Amino acid sequence: MNIASLALRLRKRIATPIQIRALLKHENQDVQLLGRALEAMRSRRFSPEEQARISAIEARRAALCASQEIVQVEDFGAGGPADTLTTSAQQTGRTVAEVVGDSCRNYSKPPQWAALLFHLVRQFQPGTCIELGTCLGISAAYEGAALALNGRGRLVTMEGCKAFAAIAAETVAGLGLSPQVSIVAGPFHHTLGRTLGELGRVDYAFIDGHHDEEATVRYFEQLLPSLGERAVLVFDDIQWSPGMRRAWATVCRHPRVAVAVDLRTVGVCLTGVGAKLRRTVVME
Image (cartoon, rainbow, N blue to C red; front, top):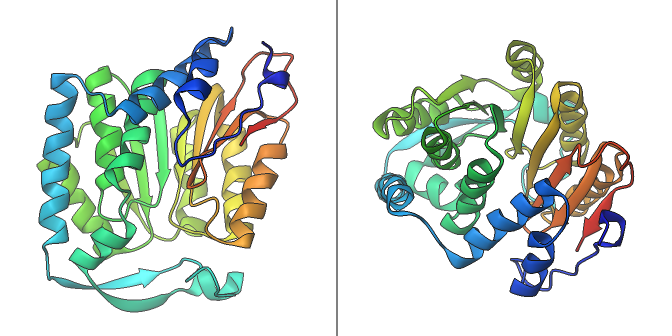
């Protein structure tokens, strides 16, 4: 089966076993790795060593969810799905008071989707990773734990809110992941270009934290020159708003995207799957 004929309809939030088996049987190794990550996510399968790491992260999540601490949050995002903030208004930002526990419950990736990030990093073994949208550090901890277990790689995670970045730093340090994870605080439109210049090549990217059509496409285009020959990109909340659905469609059409999997909540893209493959295939 070639990639151009591999069009799957994911009727649920996670690929079905039949659909995953199609990925696992594909002749391309990267497509197989994607299938393995989805299979591990769906089965909730972890080795004892992996489970120990995950349990520690979830204990940290529970502590954050119980926190009543109030922090001042600089919000550079798009607001709610129905909001129509201009690019200028988003870049200027606004300050709101947030309860840490509420923020953790509302913004941190649930265990199911955080596990997908973990398994993607475990399967693809990226050397250099970037995350846009740290929040309190839960997703970064999952990715960092995978890097630690891989025995290689590093993650730079970026957060617009300094208060959240400080809590995320406590999360990372408390879990012993400081060798794998570093945090950059500040709005993405100020920090992303410099960070990419320092990183050089990027093998894995998780784009979260700014659910705006124009911004999402812009970050994707900024990432493109830095992407390695084989790269994995994960986009969060691709169905969050009409604008995010359009942004995801734009990403899928790009000639460097060889495979794009629509999991309704999350989208996963692979680049560099075969030198002759220029056509995007969206599995939805």
